[in-house]
Image 1: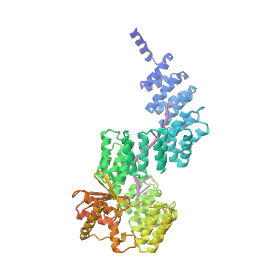
Image 2: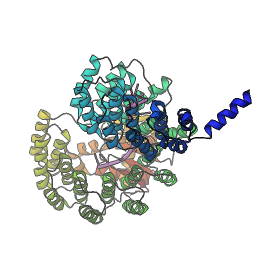
Image 3: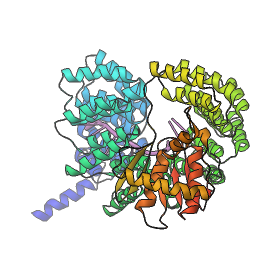
Image 4: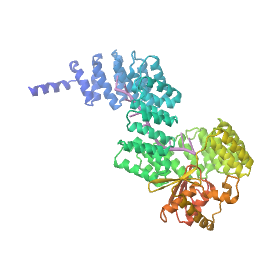
Length: 627
DNA sequence: CTAGGGTTAG
């Protein structure tokens, strides 16, 4: 009896043309992965394939992302005048969406006589995932107009498009809606919502939403970590990472990518290496995103050879991989390496250079003292050679480059030639150059225009007053300071830090907070004598206060990077390299001090400031005194 | 059936 049944069964499945058995075979063939045979079967039949048959076919096509096969199924429905129900139409929509045929998906949606939450949401999220934010929003708007009720799936996806396409205003309105409908404590909705606030720079709001979530998971924690890291609030990012771990969650590869951004910012090489080890030991998927952030971390922590090794071993490099590596060379002032790598990138033709690539290349020319090469690359961009038209940022980069080289007049002319109005950033970098090269006339003009454009930015007042100070125009200095007191918010204070035994030691100018400050000051007194014997002459023009010379010298020795260097000398053993980091640009006097320091105490010194690296060995700096 | 977090720029 048993054998007999099996015989019958076999004969059924081996004679596909008999209309009697169609129904079972199609779905069975589909679930066995035999899609081609199922399609053959389909071709022999009419609308009697029915709901289950079509559903199975579409599922199989979706599984394999088999676009042409799916199109045949769709065509078959039309040819046989089969009228699919909302469910099947939605499956069709999802199929087209996942195959990146968004127009076809949209057509299916438009032609649906009855749309439900799932069909609306599937369309919105597909638009959102492929970066079509404004389309996503317009479908959402249409959904609201036609009385469609969004659910938690819809809200979880819509905030991403809000922030990308239309700023925070719309997002806030929708936020109001979800509070009314009680979706705001849903974890998917909440993490998307907090992410939106974080990306808009409203990190306090983001944190509040995070804290109000009834439960937390890796994704919501990662969202808040990434939010902090993207705003440069690196310590807060680290804190949240520790909290994630202490609450027993396992970081995933996205979490590590964001963590590494924060570690790069703080230049915590040891922690970065630890993170790298964890990733390898826990066998997390080693996606390009993660490798890119490792490349960035190593190069920003001064370890270019590790970065390059990772880069060389990548099986599949994205544009971001190339960009991260280019930026690494650029920050170390290695202009020729930047150009060499850029050439390789263009030769390889696997990925196209993007706007950031060209920015990195131009800034590489800038830091590497190769202005003329930079200018000719810029001309190439204008001529369409790289497929990237220069935007404001590229113009800014050229202004920065010319300014750094002391070609202030050219930089000024260049700004006048810009097709759009110069942004505050562009003017700011020219003002900075005027300060460095003591170009008082142009600096005065630019400075006052900048203050008109952004009166709240304290940095502008500071640089302008410094410029006046170095020209000895103390009355103007006082005027500018008075204006600043009236209008501006306080500027970020300069500080330097150094890592010692798993702790970051921070120093401000004339520090009064560090527990070992007395010891550091005593040591500073001692070494300043040795330094002077070795040829250190304090550069009093770096002091921007109208005080006597003795006072000026004292102020110079109080600079935060000198304190950190001195601490490094006390805290570490002979011959150990000292690595100091500063949140602002390093001053000329401190640079000179560090060079002589490295010679006198036989220490390699590595200094990373806001813009770049200085690797100092035996009194010679990798920047060749050009920065 | 539909959903959230990601790396590079200065």
